[in-house]
Amino acid sequence: MLAHRIGTEKANMLLEKLIDLPQRVFRRVNGDTRDYRHFLFDELRERLGGRSPSNILEIGPRDGQDTRRLLSLRPKSLVLAELPNHREFLEERLTSDRLIDDVEIRYGNVMYDQVVSKEETFEVI
View 1 (spheres, rainbow, N blue to C red):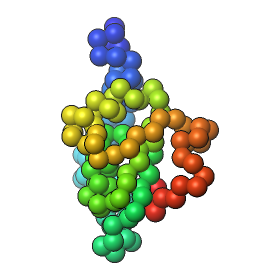
View 2 (view 1 turned 135 degrees about the vertical axis):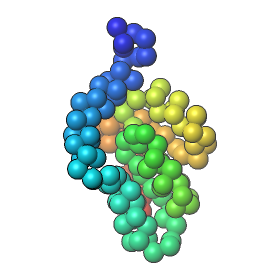
View 3 (view 1 turned 120 degrees about the vertical axis):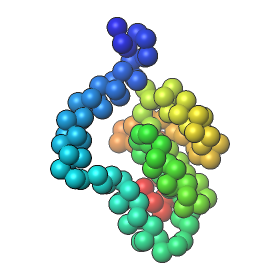
View 4 (view 1 turned 135 degrees about the horizontal axis):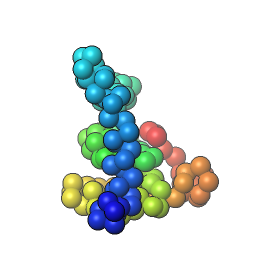
């Protein structure tokens, strides 16, 4: 019923969040409020030493927080690789966040599809 009202993809994402909810609540109740992605980005920025990377490949952009962080590094290009069944959600989110013009989106499975050519190089993946 819910999938008919909001779409299968959004219903699946909601279900994933609900399944993970008890674990997230447990961590928060015990004082752990860290977002590991924030720490990973800080480490990346430290490793770059103030340089702007030339090309970045983000695989599975999720909620857009990491996309914003990566764009703050001022790369020459940011390529998002996403599964085709996430197209509607991703484009809707990037449009509403006003990020759609700042990224290049490629659809496919990076493990099995030719999403990225062998000649392309990315400084950050």
